[in-house]
Amino acid sequence: MRSVKVILRQDIDTLGSTGEIVSVKPGFARNYLLPRGLAYEATRANLRQLEEDRSRAEARAKRDYLEARRRASKLEGMSLTFHAKAGEESKLFGSITSSDIADRIREQGIDFELDRRWIELEEPIKALGVYSVPVHLHAEVRPEIKVWVIKQD
Image 1 (cartoon, one colour):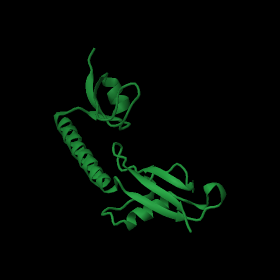
Image 2 (spheres, rainbow, N blue to C red; image 1 turned 45 degrees about the vertical axis):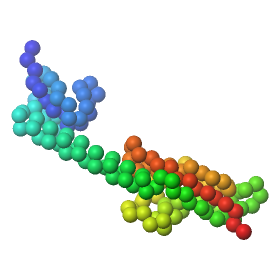
Image 3 (tube, helix red, strand yellow; image 1 turned 90 degrees about the vertical axis):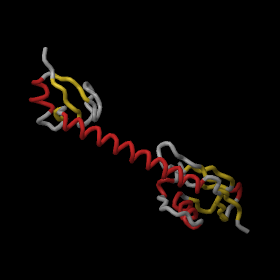
Image 4 (cartoon, one colour; image 1 turned 180 degrees about the vertical axis):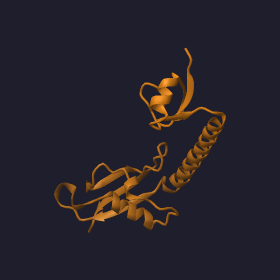
């Protein structure tokens, strides 16, 4: 039985994942995969292009990781203090949100743009205390900052 090699453009459950080289029957490639744009032929030129794309993606991923580590070094050990009005049982009048934390971090003079969505606060802080708040900079880089919420006089 003859087969042809194709490079997958997207994940296909029964075949493989994006960028993978798979062997399929010629009719399946000719009548289904190629016309729908799910794969392309595994020619020498296409294989060379695939390798270039992979090496570029690896370089980009390494650069992104190193930049995230650099940013994390600026945030690690950072401690923020919020003075808030509080009632009985240390409950705040209002709350401290991820936007408040991001604004306070920016005030510290960091040299990069910090998006409030990177602050991983499950829900707004509504009580006095000390909180450890992770900041999602990269899939593998999550520095934590200390947030102190103390009673305003």
